[in-house]
Length: 297
Image 1 (cartoon, one colour):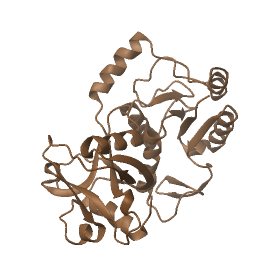
Image 2 (image 1 turned 30 degrees about the horizontal axis):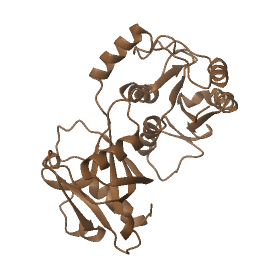
Image 3 (image 1 turned 180 degrees about the horizontal axis):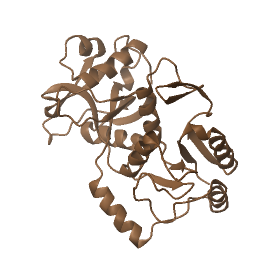
Image 4 (image 1 turned 90 degrees about the vertical axis):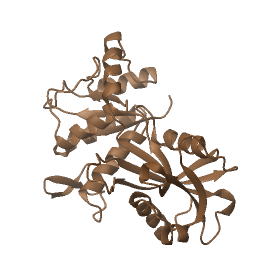
């Protein structure tokens, strides 16, 4: 059976059920990548903090990191809803999963929120784990009726997540002040930013970033460590906002930038990027964090 990751969702007041599902899935070869062990240490305005959570991080950062796990796992989402309902946070996670074409399963029929879930997606954890263990794959629920509804949902769903990379040349990695590749974009009023793009429905984060870098620059990328996940900082008060997920990226090859979007590309030292270049605020945040840790790929 191929590697099959899963993310669990629901109210942490069902901590015992979370741990039961984790055990059942693990025994079937399913890798529960999030959350960590569900043991609530404290509450922050009704938001539960687990013993494994970093106390220095805000609840908003923790929520964004969980959404990052949902999109990047490449597996499926399992919603624990013994009362047939989901709270606000789990409902937001469900929306992200639907928008990005992630497979969804629920423990019970979902009555609140009133959102479309494909027929055949309600599975007790023992039954789902047994199916996976026997067949080495998830059960199908892609009937003709479901395909039609999924097509409608896909046309309505807007990408919520953008990926970006702090791109460093593999041949120059050991320099004390490494060069990074920046993009000057009309989308940011001609300011500089890191190379990135909004991900498409059904696309994984790694796949999206690697293909974006190769298409935009002609370089061959190798993804490194996750740097930060955060909400968009925009000078536009009417901006709808996005979630940014940024990684360090090692590249090889010759720069052959695309010529159809009006963007310009260039290598610049990290210190110059932070000191002399007119960076848009999201890129500046990522580069400052990268520079402060000098985290190599």
